[in-house]
Image (cartoon, helix red, strand yellow):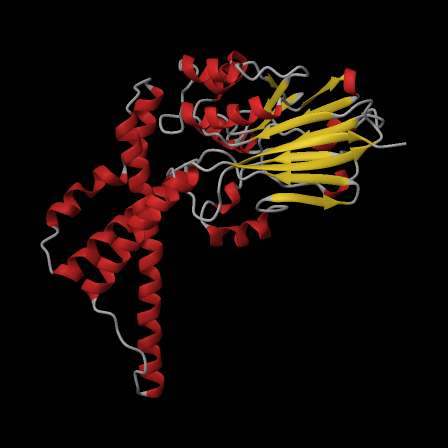
Length: 370
């Protein structure tokens, strides 16, 4: 509940800020805009309501999410203009001179509007360009070479649709991996009834199986529907459990997202317990949606796969994420353990990315030459 109060308070402020700047730039009567603003402010809630009810309204959903992106980017960009004018006033107050030119309200508004729309267009374009990263890891634990396709954060919903799955399928058909792994947020809405999504995902049928864990968005939307969708799509869902692929001497450990505990869906489960009694001769793959790690587990696994960060979605955010998580994106080596953080395929809000293109990763685990 606290999240919703904070989110809608900020979202409402951004809308009021936009209307205020519009009025100041063009000296308009904006009473009507103030009156209709609640419709836009609470549109994300309306989106969740009709999505859960099973209504497929793509164009309305697309508009709601793009509007969210518009209002947030406009706010971020215009705050910089306000900061600039604040510096001018402070300089003038301290030194009694004004060495920098002020920007008129109308010019500021038009410039920020153009910048925001341009960013939205580019941001949407960037979501369409999937990057494929390839890594080779040598190990003496496996009897033969294996290939793993790692996907994360497709956020399948009313806007993230078949096109996102087809991006992954193109890589799958080209690479022909032995194993497919999804590290959460595959689902971001009620989708188990969407047969086209299920059938496309079922086309990925690797010889050694496909495995998945849950992310935070599965808990935010409809956890029961998300679990059903994973199973219908042919994934083996790992929920604080371990499975073994004896043919290649691999063990896969999967943990539920911590938000499942925070929201009261599941009890807290110590990750360390999953590693107790584990056969250390196996190549251990650890799946965790959010890239946070108990450092005592370093060396207990060979490869950890995560997602969640989206690389920040907007380029500068990555520097904040690096303070919170192991990494905002990429492959990290800690001791004898490798950790890879994916930027994901889809988006969890507005369908835009700026400086953070979507990705999947292909890992070739090669038998160490003797």
